[in-house]
Amino acid sequence: MINYSNVKRSVNANLLEINQAKARIKEAKAKGETPKQADVELVNTEVQKTFAVAQYSEVMTIEKFAKHISSHGCVYSRADISAILYMAVDCMREQLLEGKKIRLGDLGDFAVSLSSKGAADASTFTAQNITDVKVFWEPGAQFKNLITDAEFNLVASRAAQAKVLKALRAGESKVDLEGADNGDNGGNDPGGNKPGGNPGGGSNPSGGSSTGGGNTEGGNTEGGGTTEGGGTTEGGGTTEGGGSGSDDGHVNI
Image (cartoon, rainbow, N blue to C red; front, side, top):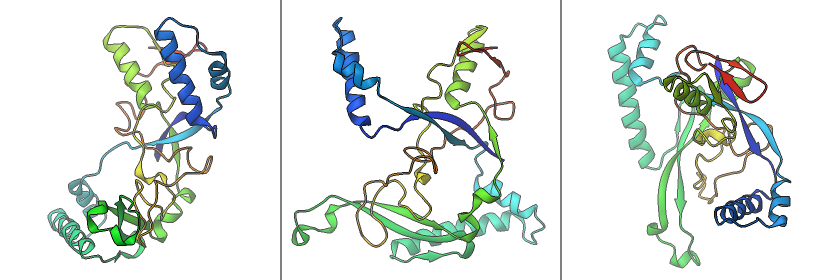
């Protein structure tokens, strides 16, 4: 079961200009001035749509993963499996640093991708221009069609959970959830790109520089398939203590 929450994202092509207008409006209000009408009208053209944000419910460490594998009738002990996994990590790192692509069957391919600073021409480009080395994962067959077997469970966003918990600790009976699903919480999951895309920008394995890769609206999420870290709270993904919704954007707790 994959937990997810809803997040609102702006889908305007001129989002940069809209955000700049918002900043000017905020600055004008801070000075006690009236914002420019053009900025107000531009902000009013903003269109937001609701997308899904994955929330993981637990972090599976190597030890937990080894225990899970051993519970599936494996002839090896949890300690043996843990040792093999740790050795696999060390050996993968070693082979990647030697410039090799590692193909692990249905798990997929692992290779390195590079980020670099541009040079005027090839004659002035050196290894000093390379700024980062990232790991590129291209999923194997078992991971390319997860949607066909996935089941989904809607939970509160991490921001909403935090607001409810804060209200509970303060002894409040209502909490304003306005803005809790606007996408300002939770970091972007580097896997927001399509399978085979470059995680977190950088260059592709063939050496072509990229700038992070755009994501298509609707197919995944606008601006990347994000994962709200931390997953769920007590109570199976909903906020601790539950709480019923109301029509005024508040939740009774």
